[in-house]
Length: 316
Image 1 (cartoon, rainbow, N blue to C red):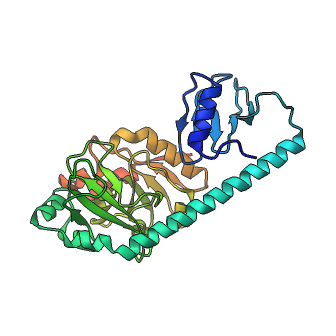
Image 2: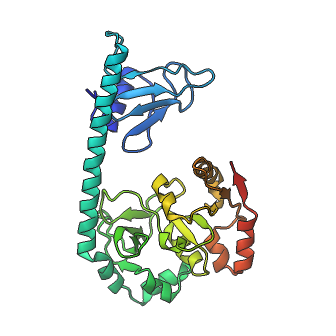
Image 3: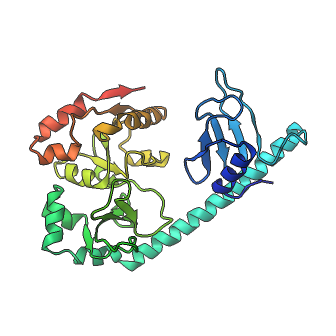
């Protein structure tokens, strides 16, 4: 049986077993760190069921096992095989429950029509705020952007927020709703209306019939650049997780360009490399020392903007 029920519990067990180990949680079911045995950077992988291994490679120990196994029992190959199968089934069951909870939350969000109420809240000052970001009036209407005078996610300070609905590729179903908090520090600007909705790709409808796909950092960048006809989608932050299934939204056999902000080149290269491994053509755009939406707002012409895309570096 699995010896842990969550990644947090598994991390606690691992750090108790190896004092000084500093695991970083990467997702709801995986954490990693330097290996406690051979020290290989980020090679030690821990799963939420308590199974761990040191990723094989030159100079790495490739050790694997379970957190509750302190070498007091020698597992036969058959016992290990059955235990892994049991842990995998347990993990699949938890994933199915998470998926069902997410679908229920999304359905509640759609039935609430809260994005329409936020859109109706827009006043002259809110329109001016959106315009200051480079969003035109027609786009404010088209994307159902909104305003909330007391953000429900900010129970401590009651700051206002500007709302961004996220729809599926057909633009018929709401899959998320993001609040952009006013007067918030970097790293705390964006919050979801409801927890448990999962990560989403913003602006996927821009990709329909396109000759390429351009991945930017953030939904507002996607809106501003799409106003000029560019097929851009937005990740939520430079470290936003990209889901492999999102590749199905991109035009088949067309290149994908990653144009994260100038301070996120390494993140862009990692994302491009991951996409390239799937067989897709992936390129990294090297912007000048300006964010891609700011370039257009500052007066860069669409042709000048597109020139940076054409000069992008292919990643293998």
